[in-house]
Image (tube, rainbow, N blue to C red; front, side, top):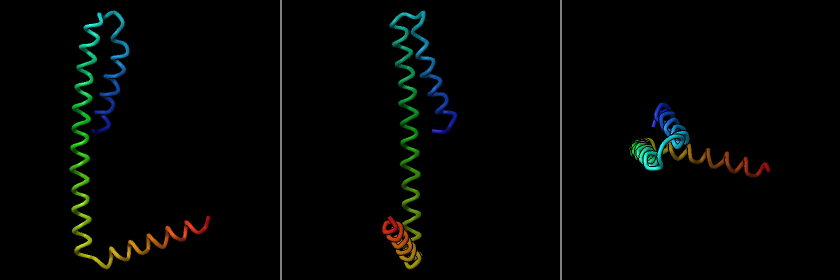
Length: 90
């Protein structure tokens, strides 16, 4: 979900807070149901995009480690040393 979709969702929710004024409860509930359906659809799209990007990142990392195993090992070792150093400084 991009920034515009988030703004649309926020706008829909804000408009719902004002829709009860002057509307019958059935109309307000119908608008609420529509807004919830839109938000659910946007969240579903966001979830799908996030999962797809995470899988791509995992595949890329896996390929990188297979092509450069010693570089990956060195990066992990340096990270471990840095974390250990910072943890003992407390």
